[in-house]
Image (tube, rainbow, N blue to C red; front, side):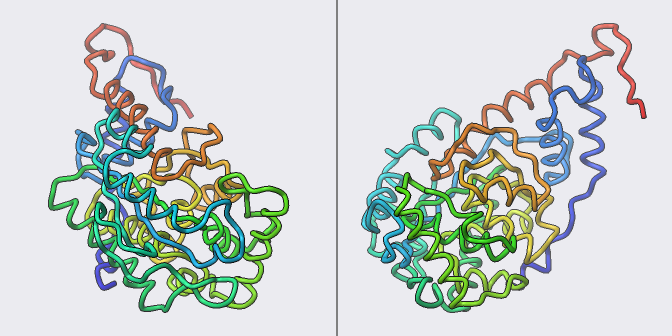
Length: 347
């Protein structure tokens, strides 16, 4: 965790240079909206106005959650291993999208209940304990999950990765993320808990009660992100928290996927607020806490399409939009080239 001291806010001079380049493109000022802001943010992270996201990698943190014992999901925890194996073998939903959008995919076993041969082994424990009965894991294990995420970013940086996308796979993780969200946002479990993969009314009630019990029994400290992860979170959430922090340590922008990823982003922000400069939101999750988490982070996501698939798929769908924006940003269609007077920013 010593590396967290290396995190500094980005140098806004680079985003100002990118902003000036946008203003030279022959179009109304700011007319590509949030995509202009994102390119400027990437410029500040990469310390150049010549932004480059050509080498991009989706990191899918895979882990099981003991809270499934409370009947909070339609499927049992065995599905985590099956889906993680598919991601590792390149046949899952995220692999399909990544192939189209030119991204690599790494599946990481950070806490699956059994061993899976086709994924990267970073296992900290064989699934967490049931948060409705006690803490998910020890504080030391939570810190190990965070460090694993940071280490993965270090390795990607050594491989010249320009953009990281966060993803997860873990049955029961919309329950753990709801518990984390309830604690961090100071909101009731009813407000932040959704149906996940399509729970019935009865199943949703069980899920809300599990979150209530988790918060009541464990009493996590909302000002201590590691305490929150260890008591009511999951290993996938801890690992993604490390990805966001690692992006800030090693200077790589990191895309937030859905509600589980957004919960990890807020945990990272709680640990080191400056890491917000390195985060890019992709979409507003259909889960209740999704919008609330992004609002708390002060981030505006460009896609609002009711997405709730996970695996990093929502983040992947941002890629062609960013690629399109960069193409306009780098185009030769500029005021000076076509003899049109520039628009002027007015107060």
